[in-house]
Image (tube, rainbow, N blue to C red; front, side, top):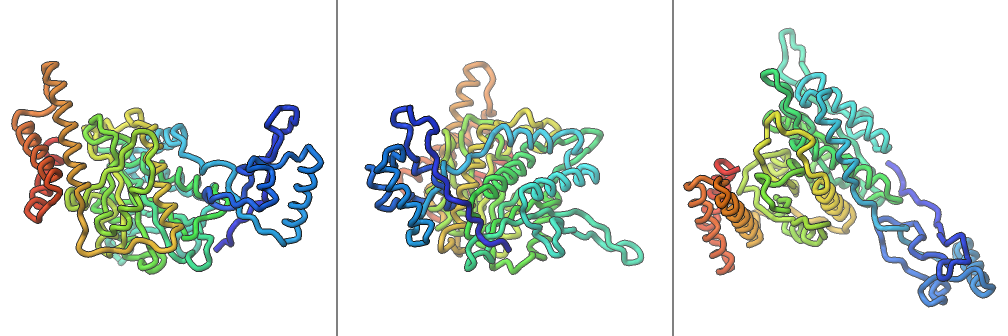
Length: 454
């Protein structure tokens, strides 16, 4: 475990005092505490009227030297903030990661060679960021054994990759927030490579970008943050199942599991600037926490219940153990599980915006005093109905536009059913209530759309 990292306080001021209004220390240029905490000025700093001190006049210089003496003697404690807002995800860096992971050399990350390259890539990134190995024996790797062969010899089916950024709070560092994105995909089938750019290279790029951003903070979050990239997600979630059955520490210490898939494009490539987040219904405090994050750009964060889509990613095994979780996804599209899921088709600005939201959520849970707890039964809200209403409305508008051009997006039967779903969800929103029968109908409707429309 590492102790909190404290960087020396630094005052920035313009080196050219001739420039009017620019020759004073910038209080926002003082560094010291994590995450943009409020700058608490002492009276010495406030004497200049809130704009800092002009150390190029004698009075300002004397005040400055008196402040330095007080700080140096330990008689004055000043809480300070970073020199700027927390760094934001970089779209170009995310793009480079996706193009690398989805390149022909990685063989769709489903072959022996491709998976080995992916593991080496992840481990190298974790080492570069000075993240600690997650697994026993100082290893970044967790082997997943297969059935025993003749003579009792075990084969290795797959390998999870993980690292940890130790928390800075001695009381909370043994609690964990896990950020996850599976790295495996379909590999090469029938002589065709399945690059898996959106599934799931984009989410792995997100994971590495969040790791870079958090590792660059002057002080780590209070709780430890785990970066976990599971193998064998495409094989009945076997990698995450193995991790849950063989965790490095008791699962009770995991305060939140976050995973993501298909976040580089939109549902059915609709003009719908939304990322869907599921799991908040099992920990209502999580839903409020997510709603408290301001999405960048025009991104919308829309809630859905996992009962509407089923277990479709690595959150499944954690859900089974009642570990609070969140699943971020843009939804399926025509290139899902196809050789055409290539890196050039992702929206990297969108990916960077979703990365920022996930970073903020992880950071908040890793920092708050009390984390949201598991809730049984799940608590559903009208927000989920709003999400379905928005999806169906967008789909119908797009179909109208395309029909005017002579080719609709939906068949007549699909349009009839989608129209009915849209009408009924609007009625639910108008009545501001959803009874059990409505919920059962909503589940059937959502799953019908996933199977037949998208």
